[in-house]
Length: 98
Image (tube, rainbow, N blue to C red; front, side, top):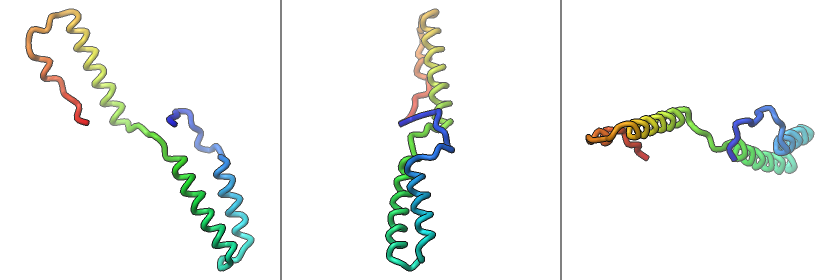
């Protein structure tokens, strides 16, 4: 989901689980079975968190290109409305490459 108003300091339930798991890991020895199981669980939680945080992001370059293309289209349409296009000048318009 795309959102402009996303708060970065907002603690999610997933982050709370990560914090709880880390605090529980401190109570165990690093070579114990419980510590290994918690470490595996922590790795899974971090993978889920990275999937949650990476979202649909629009590059500023893409936004500038889109705005420039729309402006060009509106200028051409405005000119065509006022004046008859009698030449092949429309072919000089830069075509986007996808």
